[in-house]
Every structure is written in structure tokens, then in C-alpha cells.
Image (cartoon, rainbow, N blue to C red; front, side):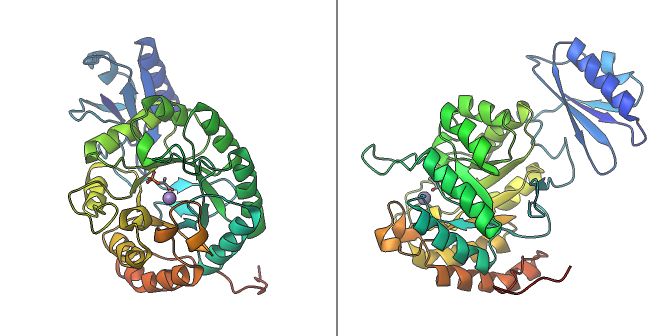
Length: 351
Ligand code: PEP
Ligand code: MN
């Protein structure tokens, strides 16, 4: 159920409707739009008694939502969600293409700082890097843990980047929420509903990666879990799915981008690295992602990929990343996107 407020409804009227929803035993989710506010209702097992709400002052319409997801839906919010970050003008879902780059895993201070400097110079606004790694093998490198998060936070301060890093459980989520600017939920955890609920109570935006066998509806329902707990800053990520083809690690399903855009107001970015599995295919897939309308990219970069502790084969060298970014500018302009122009090193920016 969804309540659409009148264009000229007052804040008091919206609050009164939310209060009534609570009295009925449900949870209201007011989402202000460009022209009017919509209030999503969750927590109901069956149909909500619409009559008791439709007559309240300021209410324009009470709409039954037929889809299983509500808060992620365009019915709830017609205009695109733009995710913003405290202390930064970088966005995800706005006009500027969001560029996230960095190593698969944080391995050491030197490794992280070298790559962070390189991706910042090339125009990335977000530094990626896992401190908690959900690996297919229990014997593979599991990440540096909290020490890795400390290094990410230090790199943020040194290079002016926003930090996006993965949480894998209750404990790591609390730490990631504390150190990072964005909480990544990995493909393997996309349907870890307990973790999604925790992310929904966290203070930072969530980057939700598509599970390797997840449908579009599965992905939207996972995002709904996060939003239903009150965190409305969710960014979806297509990172390739399992198919019968074996010429790439995963198959990049670019068609999910326009499909998400049709059904949801949430931003969606593309991860060409985990789809490709090999660095020679990363830039072409990144270009495909931008061309199809993705709101950004998350790309693995390493200064010495042959010695990387995880995902070296798909990690770009910094100069390849910089060349990839340059090759995106034309396509970005063509699809109405702007790209961040980093200032040349040492140049003083006049205020
Ligand atoms: C990663 O970003 O390094 C990662 C593990 O990604 P995914 O969850 O998409 O496999
Ligand atoms: Mn990786």
C-alpha cells in the first residue's frame, strides 16, 4: 500500500498520516519527491484498510501496490534517487558518472596508498578495497580485517576519496559503518537477509551487488529488505551472473540496467571486473555499462596485479585504468553524463 499526498500537503499533514499508519500497527516510510510526498506502508501481512487513510487531510490517493517490492519501486518515487555522501559533492545516481576503483583486497599500506593515489589522479571519486573477503575457498586470503579498514580511512584522508568496502557479517558491518562511506554487500551475501536488515539500520549508503544467480526481482527484493529498515540510500550493482558460457568469469547482464531503471528509482552501477575475470575485457565491458545507462562503475586496479592476494588477473594496471577512464568520456557525454575532471597534481585550485 502506498499513500500519495497532495502536491500542497503540509508537513504536519504528512506526519499525521504517518502517525495513523503507526497506530494501525504498520511502519510508514515517507519519501519526499520533487512535487509531492509518497508514504510507503510496510509491516502489513494482508491488505491495509484503505478507507481509514484515504480520508485523512492532505491525502490525494491510496494505491494498492501489486508488485512484491514497494519502497524500491518507481510507483513510490517517480524521480531517480541520488545518493549523497557527507562532506563530499560526489554522488551516485546524479549527472556525474560515479567512478569507484581500487584493489580487490587491502593488502598493505604501501599497496593501498600507491593504487589510491593512481586512481584518484585518473578521476575516481571512490576507493574500493576489501578488508573482509568472502572467498570461495576457506584457505584463500580472508582480508586484513579492522587494520584494513584503518588503512582505507587513512587513504581517504590522504587522497580525498570516499571509501567503499564490504561487510560480511554482523561484526564487520558495525566496523564498516564506522570507518567507510559506503557499505558493500557482496554477491554471495545478496540474500543474507539478516545482514540486509542490519545494513538497513546502518548510517551509511549501501552498495548491493547482484547475486550470481539472482533475478531482477530477487535483487529488488534484497534492496527492499535494506530500505524497509529505514536506509533509503541503496545503490544496486550488476557484476555478472553464472551462465553456461565460460569465456568470461561471469556474464555481464547489461540488460538489467534499463530493466532496473524502468522498475526502480534506485541507481545501478556496473562492475566489469568480476564479470570479465581477465583484465583485457574490463575496459570494453565498462564502456558497455556506461553506454547502457549505468550510473557508475566499480573497477579493480592494482599496481602489481601478478602478486595480488586476490583477483589479480582481472585487476587493471593504473595506466590501463586511466586510459579506460579517458575512453569513457565520449560515451558518457553521448548518454548525457558528466565525468569528474581531476585537477593535475600540484595545481592550486582557485576558489
Ligand atoms: C569484490 O568486490 O571484490 C567482490 C568479492 O565482489 P562480488 O561480491 O561481486 O563477487
Ligand atoms: Mn574482487
